[in-house]
Image 1 (cartoon, rainbow, N blue to C red):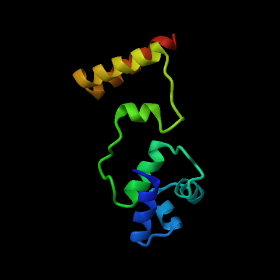
Image 2 (image 1 turned 180 degrees about the vertical axis):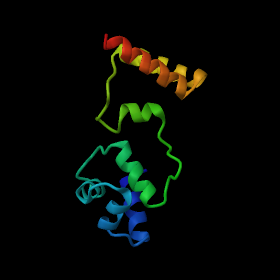
Image 3 (image 1 turned 45 degrees about the vertical axis):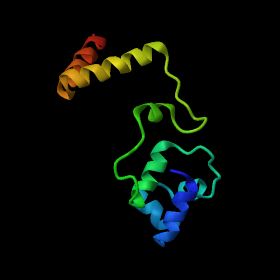
Amino acid sequence: MEIAKLNEERKKQKISIAELAEKANIPKGTVEKVLFGIVKDPRSSTIQAIEQALGLNQQPEWTDEEKALGVGRHKTYLSEDDYEWLELKSEILRIHGENYLNTLKTMLNALTKE
């Protein structure tokens, strides 16, 4: 969501920046920097917290790819190996579930401690 729309909604709801920061559980200074345009490329998690505090976007609309890339110029670059591990993890979760993944993690941790 655009910053201008967040500001508009905050004013419409008559919520102070301090109240918004408290509801969003993020520092007041961060909210100010985002809403006043000082931070040009805020993190997607910060925007989501503000949106949710304003009662907007109750179901996050950020795709996994957007979360991985970040917002604006703050991108996360993964090596080919890292990307392959993430894909493998996703497939294990999809096919076998979280308990199975946790068992594999425990086994791998045990192997690396020997």
